[in-house]
Image (cartoon, rainbow, N blue to C red; front, side, top):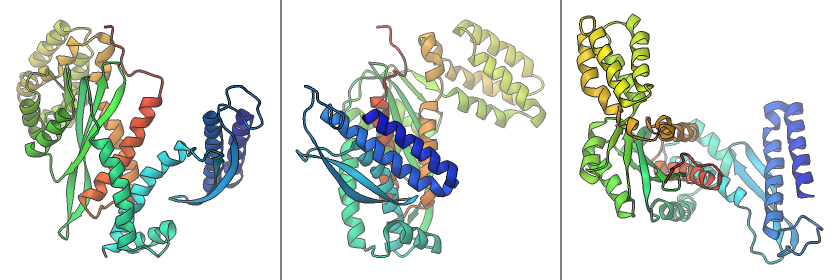
Length: 387
């Protein structure tokens, strides 16, 4: 029964989109959210509606109307209820966290008097005009408590650690500054990936990276066998201070980008990039060194600065050759975090400018917490450890 309802709802949503295009998007999302919550209640009760089964653990008790304010507008949802009153659909809660964080960021801009006409319009659409600093503060405190608990949770053994940063616009003391969003991902002993933490600071200086890494260690992070990152000076100094004995893999993608700064003319860039890719795609470390020597000889006369740079820097991308061959492609770049950065940017470009660092951290944390929960429920390991 639940499966039939879910399939029917999907068909209904498709029809809405076919008939109305993007104008029907809010209605389609409403249909799908109602179907997801309906199916989740059936799973909670271990029985479909009206199904007689010995596995049933409770009974349905109708629906409760709830209007959810989102970027698509108001969604009139019907939240399933149970007689014991203990059920609440997690599919609704997960989607609400990042929406709530985004809404708070925009509302904070409004109540702090830095709103533009665009911000005012968004506030009118999403939360009405009855927004006060008290309401915003109360809602922010409630959400921040949940997100802080996630950011400071106990960690454990992780064999691989991937680090990267991106920048967001933050207002501070009347100025608009670039704040660095620091992110750490890990691959556990079971081969599953996880988001270990995030932080927002005004730069990628060593002091900020060192504090961030030290907090990961204090939370129980241990057992590291490899750290993957770019070669940012502040990050490198912090890595050596906090995890001095852990091998480091320099991101091969960033290395290839860095090489472009030493190519004497644009016409050589594609050829140099292909030569560097062939080195990183070598079957083993010996062949990689052999191809590097060929590159150094090839460009010694035509691009001496490139040759000198390559001799010193490209070997920093060779650590991945010590990993099992099935792990190399995954762990030779910071792509694991780069994909997260793309998802964060997709959300933050709606706000464009955060009123303070706390607001930025709130939205980033909410987005990452949702992604981490999805990773944990996915039945697929990121890498497979033979031992």
